[in-house]
Image 1 (cartoon, rainbow, N blue to C red):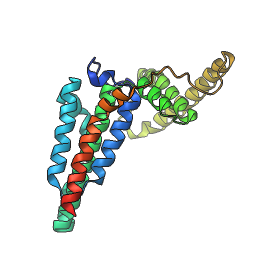
Image 2: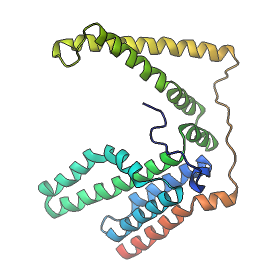
Image 3: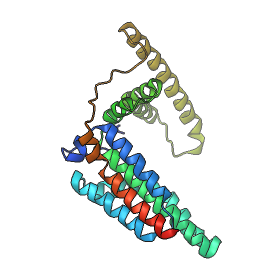
Image 4: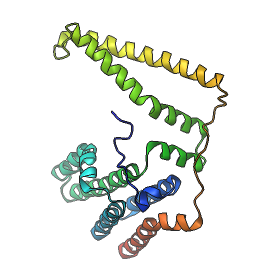
Length: 239
């Protein structure tokens, strides 16, 4: 699976924003959504309109998000079951999970759709994320496809030798294959680390990002300002 399966290539104003601005905007937007009282139904509708507006500006089709939002299905099922066990209070709790969970997922998908994995790593570096975390994330993204390709080759090799993963008694072979994949990945990681050290690796990834000007920050945080206005109105009305 591609490391950029969530990304939708484009050249919109949203795509061109520095990653650190989009990361902060997404985080603050989710915090605002979570802090909104669950009884203020209108506020969640406005949040959804705000997200769809960002999609239009980014020129990313709704279908792109609809397919990837299926990850939320278990939470949707839980929210739909809660009224059966909790009555009116359960229905309100289910709505709370469904509304805030859906908006959080859509916000995260919007960030991923308009920012490549490499840009996300650079953005985290610009936000002074600990170097060890950004290094681990960088290597994980870099070798995810390598490990996936290795797993496919091992699977084809087993099938060509008569392995049928549908049969229960073949589970031992599958388990041994997973173990072999782990050992190969570990050995590959050691070789990569030695190669990096021999080329001057000092434990920190180079920062190739660009600083964002105050004007860019203001433009990128516009959705946060809208979210803050909606949240403030909701809190005042709920008081």
